[in-house]
Image (cartoon, protein in one colour):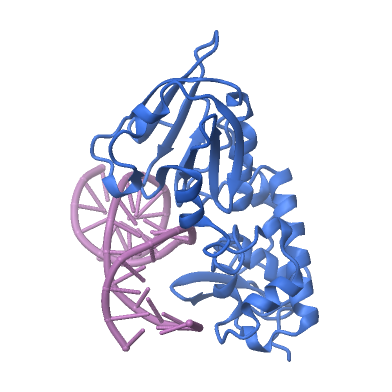
Length: 279
DNA sequence: CATATGTCCTGAGAGC
DNA sequence: TGCTCTCAGGACATAT
């Protein structure tokens, strides 16, 4: 489940496409749900001949900035991968762009479950769809004041609130759990009862946890889907302290047992010993 | 407006 | 062994 660290790793992994020209592009799967590709018509033709001038990331999306100012955006959602090497299989390959260069480089989008999206957007359309009025600040640049402004009056529990991309962009289910563990905040605590100090701690640990996860090239869970651009597993799963560790002893308080609960239809992992509801 | 729930999708793993 | 069923959680549509 690509969240910010996995998407950032993908972005870094495709640096070699910068400066290359898209010679041809094709949507591979004819049965790919049309709503997931926008525009439905002409997308590939509008790409042909364009130069990729830069890569970027917006929350959990990989961006390619083109020389005509259009932006090609890949949104991996659950199982999507942006690749410059062979995908895990041919069956779920969704998009291929042939690029200029001696080694005939390719840029591909592979997606086993097919929930991911591909968008080609003008700057104006991009802003309307994902501008600052839609998405919150990037999680790597968040601070406690911003979090408190955006969530401090909410009655939702803090953990599902951190998944709200309008509040802060890039955090998903896995890292929300890790962040709250490090910040020692109970995931069930209502936002409007989180103290200023706690918001600061949550923001600090958000940046720290995500940076660390980027260093380890993201988390490859037991289904093995997530790979970096060189088709290698991430390593941050070996550093998870709560996620998918129900039943283990807490690595911090040594007396607590990591517990799995369900919040807003999503699994939450935490240590009831050291993430106690306070304030 | 804020918040909750339903939907899409595939394949791993559980349980019989 | 082989079948059926549940579950995983991105973003967004619809309901409350």
